[in-house]
Image (cartoon, rainbow, N blue to C red; front, side):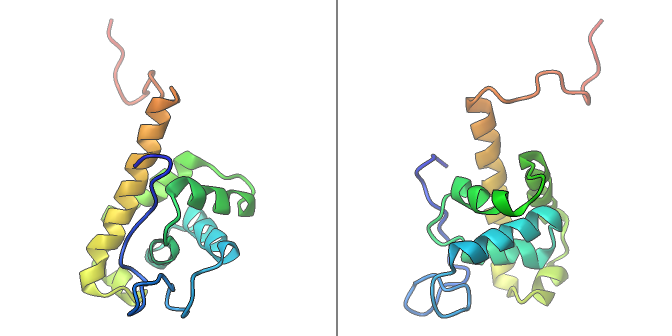
Length: 139
């Protein structure tokens, strides 16, 4: 995803196709920022589903920018960890959060796309850890 690309998905879209997050209108930036904060801090199925549904036309960078001022110690690696965990969250947790079985894959795809976006940006900006502690040293 390029910097100017926006997140697009069907989650939370009303019958007219406008993103409403289930609220009948576009979700305000303040509310989206609080949702990103919750995702960053807890990473629950409902947190991820809420952000995916409310993203509506916002880029991943915009979502990060909305959440950053609401988290005392915002950490992109922490957010990526929460997003990567989406693959391990049971479908039942998503369903308990109000996500239909047909939408679970879309929420996970949203998380994966965000992770890939962050990783590509970090590589492009030279912000990757060359000395990975998980790789044994070569003598």
